[in-house]
Amino acid sequence: MTNPDYIIIEAQEDGVHVIGLTRGTDTKFHHSEKLDAGEVMIAQFTEHTSAMKIRGKAKIISAHGIVESGSKK
Image (cartoon, rainbow, N blue to C red; front, side, top):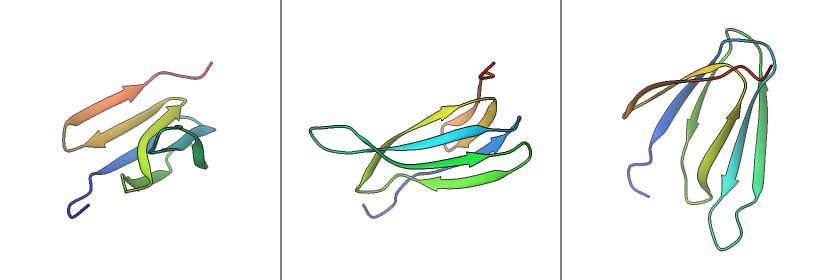
């Protein structure tokens, strides 16, 4: 990948989970982070990461716009 996409994840509550999913024939979890309210993570799609799952209330900013995920409660 010559120009991989980045996303910014800003936790809006404690305990937001960011889970990286692998590429290939079998999609599997390969990395997980837990963010607390106000914490920001900058993530990148790579040759190994094809998708991300975000569980909890967060603001996700990318080149495609801004999306807010719902609360895990």
